[in-house]
Image (cartoon, rainbow, N blue to C red; front, side, top):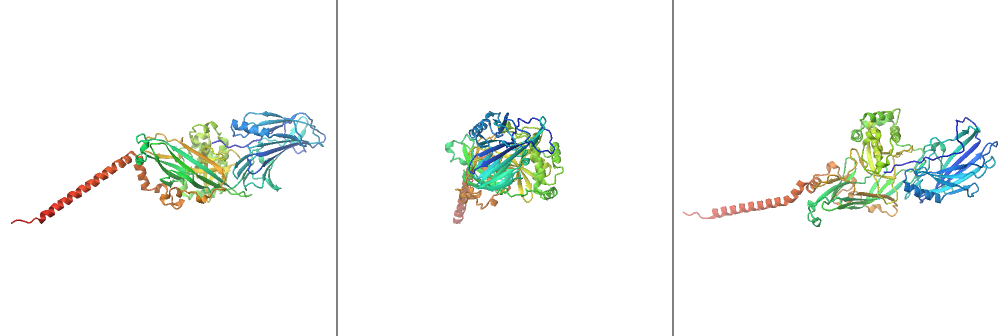
Length: 623
């Protein structure tokens, strides 16, 4: 999937070229760049207004009416060239540059290479003195800083670069300049409740139906402010799987006649429910009706579908997935345990040993992985500290490879990823699982779909990590987001579909008497997108047990596990999808008929013999 990104704001100062460390001294010049990002509920864009003010604090100096100020309007780093081109036009169409009195100011536009944004160059239009500050306001609209899925809205703002300068001295004139970068995110009173905010240090004020969240410049160095509004999202999904024709012997016209002789059985994961986000699944259409459903060892719900083998078929799943998260609470601590207590709790749960062992792709016993895992644990006192250390390490170590994301995407595993192999979300997750297991922290892989919007479009699977936390359950960690704003815990911008604790990352299986050398997902297509739940009556929708009404399951707890799937299901699969089974189906009736005839003949012969004996016994004996 497309790599998640953060913004780093480019700050350009053309008139101050050299800097030295400044000791306590009052500034001669003060440069204020205060940005307001305002969002109106329901819109898909934000209005960005940056007010640049230059003040002369020392009356012994002035700033001449020469030179220019350069503003940078950033691109969204993860966008394609086409998306960037379209968005740049949108920004420039709404661009306004004005002075302190609201008058129009001349400027020039210089578009940079993809990802470097647009330069707005504004010539200094007047001299700046202690009694006459200089002010420019630049305003534009953009879709880049907002993502809206019905009532769930995320707002983002640019970070300040790590080498940002707050104080600078011109060695030629020995003058000092102070730089201030204010940021406000402004929302109206119709927006959904605040659920997440980063950085956690901010101030809040409300006036005239508008709430302003202010972030100090010190907290924005390398940190892109991020806010989520909304505690619930409803997603609609439509999955179609086109099953291949594998039987060329039975004509399609005789499909119904010879159904048992030309059948393939496909197993597919249904979207699963999940405690962390209280994820619930509802179905509106499942076709054909599954022959049965069961739970695998990880709790995934697997459905079996019988489809004709002598023609191309289609399996259809349609329904809704609802995810939830808690509203924001100031000062609430994330899930955590001290490391000693955590190790003790894990050691007492024998079933968790399955999530600590090395596998083909999670080589937790590899020397390099074990070595890095030990280093990352050093001096850490809580399990969350270790998780965060692993997360940060992976972000620094791996580089996301867009070419691999758009290719066949061969899985290389944690060891190769650590050695510098091409990486996508799969490698980020695999390496983190290997590190966690090497540290004694139970972990497994989660597969689902992220960055879901309101647009109906095919989705690409995304992989992340789940970590076991006592008294909490499986705790989600997505290391693909390379940011100080780590994606930990509840996330409702995604849905969980299935989880894995082994080498495979797919539950699609086929049982067939025909030769299928390679089972591909070419015919697998999923659309998932956010919808309003206003007109949805969930009480009338189907649950897991409703899609197999003939099984008599009353609740999800009644769905059998794989080990208790039953002899009847095994026999059905054996008879319909194996050569021997089909032979039994063909010869079975003949054998039964022969047996019946044989019995009838035997009974008849026996009856005749008895009748003859009886007649003989009744014949008088002649003297």
